[in-house]
Length: 146
Image (cartoon, rainbow, N blue to C red; front, side, top):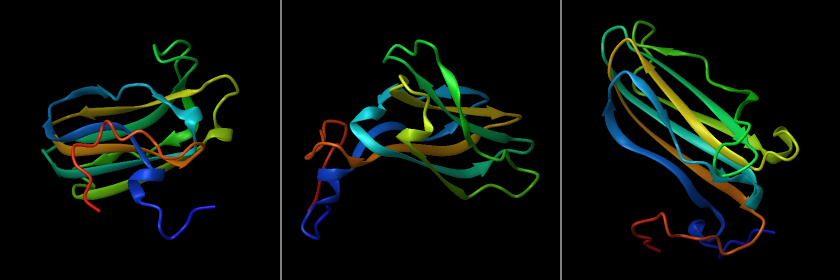
């Protein structure tokens, strides 16, 4: 059971990132993360300014290994398309996935961000939460301040 004295970085692992950038039209994949080390996976998608006509799509995919073997979209894990025309710039999206929502034998997860119609400023962070083993690795974090 989590305790008040646990540090965020001890029990939440930063497993994926697309750092803040002005992204051109294209498809941006995160790396494959081992999902089986946590009970949940949370993605934070921060969308800033969108060029005229720009759209943003995001989906979580699962695979049977870290190379992406048998990659497939996870059912129900896609956002409603964001559009510049719809005023969707400066939006924050939170997507959660419990490991039991994944196909048995599929232990790896990644995010696929698709930008179309124009450039978009955005960032994405994937976090493994409810760790099966603590403390979690912190190698992807540049600095931890307690």
